[in-house]
Length: 254
Image 1 (cartoon, helix red, strand yellow):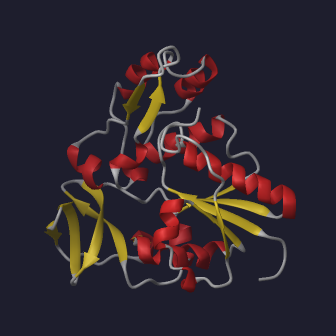
Image 2 (cartoon, one colour; image 1 turned 60 degrees about the vertical axis):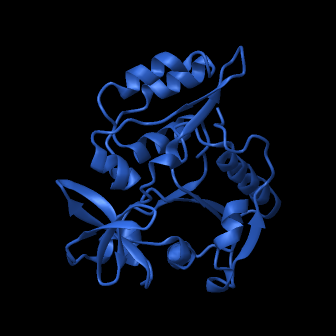
């Protein structure tokens, strides 16, 4: 690769206040940029559907006791299977959660939370990260963006955003049809509806090649979990970097 470095890291929305391991990726990227120059790109994988990704663990400011909060969305189908950028936040969640936050985070963070528009889960997370200053000077590439999907390379293993019970869900293409994972070995089979490229996102095993075909990064910052499954042979031109260590990595940064 030639030209200025492109320093990339990726993550699903991971809490309305981001988990500390994501904060460590931001910090690692900024340190690398200070050393070598170039651009920082945050690959925001908001096409994921797992509601556990947005669990937010905070500690009480006086007692240190942890509490785990998460979004409430409009219905069960959205909660289980809709991609994070289409999980619509339920009425009342914002106000109810805001009333609790004073015991856990400083007033400025409570105010940032209150001012963040209530739309869908992914937009809310991204906007709050922005209000916290985490995205300053960083280019965000979203996996939900139809232009990104259309520009990306073809992959053999993928998910599609398809209709089910009046909602859009993220179904896996398996054995010639769309399937929704119900847990364990159980799947719900949907009709084999045709899709366009703008509806398709990669599986975990094909995500690196798909992402790289759009971003063309020179360096990629990976967490410990990512190191176990990244198919580095799919992008031999990338220099892979471990994110900086951080304590209580699964708790929220605020």
